[in-house]
Length: 351
Image (cartoon, rainbow, N blue to C red; front, side, top):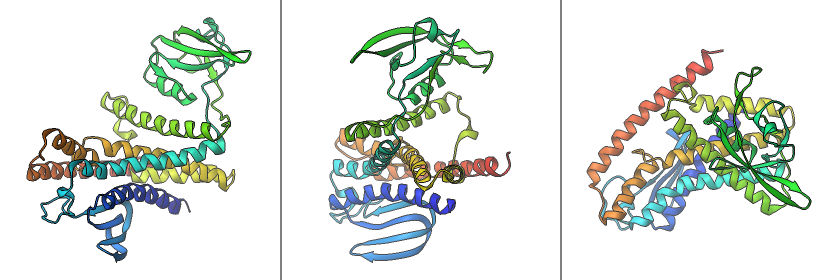
């Protein structure tokens, strides 16, 4: 069952991504030759109008093949014959639809189980938070220049600010209103945990939303949080804080789905579905961000060339652009092979 759920999760994320390209292409009057889910040989295929719809053997990947996308074509319905801003909209639609999927699922999750507030339930004796007068009930709103909306913002901030003093803004409930405070906290090494700590204690639990507006607000922020998490992870990879062993490919992602299903199903089907939906939010936001990176062969690489065309008023030479994308695709294939072997090593050969 876990394998089937994993296939459905990845199939949904890819379907929504490719549907974004497909819908905007159709709205822009571009001829779509094939809309497919999966890679490899076709399992099921049928033709409606000018478009072939296919389900392929391997449930990772998909495509929306448009006329004149990679070559010159005189047909007015060819991709490269459309105005540059129409083409930008078509290419950007895939990642945007991934963010929309993440948002819809996040709203469902938040309305079902609530959000994790950045509210203190206690302070630890002997640490900076207690020394600076913080107390249970305080709600952290900013750390240095980083806005804090949910509890996980604090943990993300502390990943890259382990031992430096931090300026903390918080609000304290007073009567029917709030009183604002600002303190500077200095992390202290805990002998018990061996890590630097500020001494703030939060429950990490969920608080129900008070209505639809708050559900939409925190649902949107869930997507923002995961986008920030992906971007920060990429930055940590560049600085060496994240190692290659931490990269997860399809096999480890399936394993994550499998573990999530096994661990949450004991609490009921609803809990399992919400847990899988939460993974889907992460994966969909991740795919959206990664596809917007200006890497040749990805949507972001194509957008980079289209934006250059919009600024210059004329396209980059198609042959040169094609060569860049071909090189980028070859490098991506090498990266995929590396991640695949990395997955196999981590899943099957390490305890």
